[in-house]
Amino acid sequence: MSIQKQSFGKTKEGVEASLFILKNKNGMTVSFTNFGANIVNINVPDKNGNFDDVVLGYDDVTGYEMNKPGFGSFIGRHANRIGGAAFELNGKKYELEKNDGPNNLHGGSKGYNKFIYEVETFEEEDSDSIEFSRLSPHMEQGFPGNLDISVTYTLTDDNELVIEYLAVSDKDTIVNLTNHSYFNLAGHKSGSVLDQLVMLDADKFTPTDDVLIPTGELSDVTGTPMDFRKLKPIGQDIDANYGPLKQAGGYDHNFVLNISGSEVEKVGELVDEKSKRKMEVFTNMPGIQFYTANFLSAETGKGGFVYEKRAGACFETQYFPDSCNKPEFPSCALKAGNEYDFVTVFKFSTI
Image 1 (cartoon, rainbow, N blue to C red):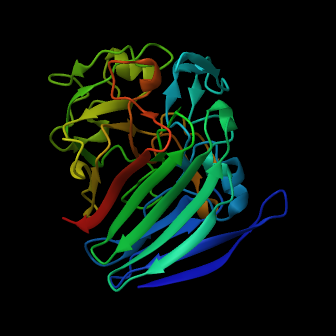
Image 2: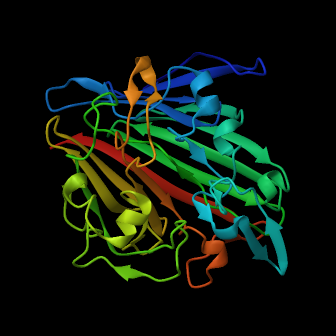
């Protein structure tokens, strides 16, 4: 295993950003930047041993300073949407930025993917890790509590990218951290992912209103375009005349995972039949937002390639959207002094 460090350009404020590259014994490489703790590249082999970068992104820090789509992004303090951009905790109402119509999305316009992080690296015999950490101060983005946060990325010799999120607050708060990478197993510049196959181990999903805030219901996926319990092409039902898909312009929905919550379990899969690449998703989070890049349009990325609508798919492990306002959902509230600790694994192989 090895870890390399190189320049990733300067921010608008003149701060030097770095790129860290982890490589395992199989030649798989994953790279990250200390600007935003973002994932920049994931290079994995196809069935014939040819490597390609399977995540959308940018060539330098300038792209990540804008990054409207959230490529590779570490998302916090609260991933996904909060209805009305407000929540109540311990009898006090907290108002947040309305950056998605009337709602708050991914914490606000300056999310955790836009800060510089402290870095520590760890090299082991069969894995390498990089830890990004910072203190999110009390009332940053409108959330209470000084939150000590870290996200640790580990690359193993089994071609696993392990993401561990840790956080502790000095006040009661809400926390919902995720990663917003856009995956395309045919390669980041191969166009649409509609032919790629997806499995999600979820019997139910959370339907939403017209501004994509969950209603609080849990809907059975049986007999609907939301049923991914067996591998099927992303494009098979994406344009179906079905209310939730029409609301979101495709898939942009939280699926209720069939897991115990105590163990890190397999919850999903993405397969590209042409390259024969496969990605398995494991987590101990209760939900996963499956998003098919419905709002992506003419975004210039790595190597000048232009990414269009549905050029990637996101698997955002999470608490359910708006859970802070839905007592019937698993709670994202974090008590002062308690530890937020969740793991997500993306494991790459071939079929």
